Amino acid sequence: MNKRTLLRTTFCILLGMILISKPVYAMHIMEGFLSPLWSGIWFVASIPFLFFGVKSIKKITADNPNLKMVLGLCGAFAFVLSSLKLPSITGSSSHPTGVGLGAILFGPAATSIIALVVLLFQAVLLAHGGISTLGANMFSMGIAGPFASYFIYKGLDKANAPKSVSVFCAAAFGNLLTYVVTSLQLGLAFPVESGIMESVLKFLSIFAVTQIPLAISEGLLTVVILNLLSAYNKEDLKELALIRGGNESI
Picture 1 (cartoon, helix red, strand yellow):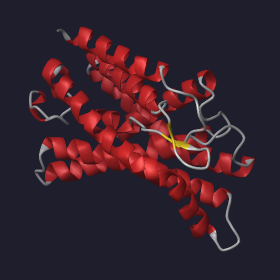
Picture 2 (cartoon, helix red, strand yellow; picture 1 turned 30 degrees about the vertical axis):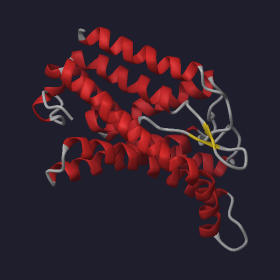
Picture 3 (tube, helix red, strand yellow; picture 1 turned 90 degrees about the vertical axis):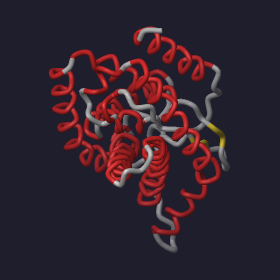
Picture 4 (cartoon, rainbow, N blue to C red; picture 1 turned 180 degrees about the vertical axis):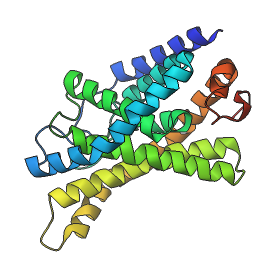
């Protein structure tokens, strides 16, 4: 199986997963849920990261145009995983994020652009998230999650942890931090009388039951996908210098 066939097959499998999923209210903050003030704050906070993200992707694709296909795969992976929704409590739901894969391969800056494209498509095509809340969703899933995944991966890698452990922990904890930041955003926007912290804890409890097993599942799936890429896309991954030698099984 050549790498193009592998990538097409992987994409088709992921696409099939989204087509059989049921629409429910999800962890993305929905359209109109935040006040204009908080929507604007999170949008402005995201802008610097997007600036560096564009520069990062331009450099990556200029140095190795063949990596465009892998970038596309990371986008498809994040789009499909973050569109899958598992009902939680109080009518909400949790979902994977899929951003750990891009953060490990391309770094957090480039992954912020991948996440932006994913969130835009989901808001327009699936009514998942929203345009007014794009900045808030971008900050949690496209910035906080990827940066957590990247630094956890690099830290464990420098500590000579097994590659599979580094990848698993990076993807799983990147997922968890996304929902922690989302809960913080909602707690700030909707404080209770007893304080912001109690409001944050209440939002955390909504997602916690389903988010932890989802984070574990995402970590395992990310290990599998990177193993496949390492096996069938060795030469291109060597350019990234994140998978040692590009030929090591994760």
